[in-house]
Amino acid sequence: MAELFNRSVRDQICDTIRSEVLSGAWNNDEPVREQSLADRFGVSRGPIRDVLSKLSNEGLLVYRQNKGVRVNSPPDEAEREFLQSIRRQIEVYSLERCIGNLTTHDDEQIEGFLLDLAVACKNEKIAAIAESDLALHRFLVRHASCEMEAVWLSITSRLFMDYSRLGNYEEILIEHKDIVQAVQQRDLEAAKAALIANII
Image 1 (cartoon, helix red, strand yellow):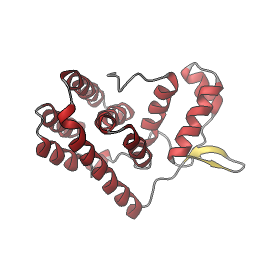
Image 2: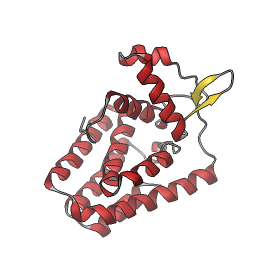
Image 3: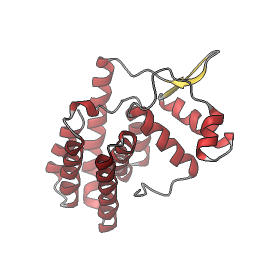
């Protein structure tokens, strides 16, 4: 998978769990067990504890007394629409700030995310689709501002990925191809339009 940046093992585990939850691979209120995750990822419970703390701070997971850490419930429709509108504003703002400063190396990174997405769509792996999807958007936000990335991540972590609105996974790939093509051509208005069409 294309590298978003030099990620630690904790970051990689965090991104994987986040993508799985957002894509619906985990049920609402499902318990999250430290030991089973430690076994799965081949690490001690310490890194897993850090990951669960981070995802709880983002609102993706929640600690319930006498129940431990569990998957949080998604926001109601009104809250979801509000958060989605903020996400769109952040990403448009980020594009405006970063598009003129991107390099050919950045273009290669973005192309890598798109290739990862194409493989995930071909294999119909929802969690992998979500991870590649998020990675591409996050890359652009991070290039605008690391501080903005943190705000974006806290909002995005509360938004489950609604792939059911699309007829097939090819549509997901086409939407992101439009974004990548416009960004690589440094066409700000086309990139903004493609982003807005994608984030609904």
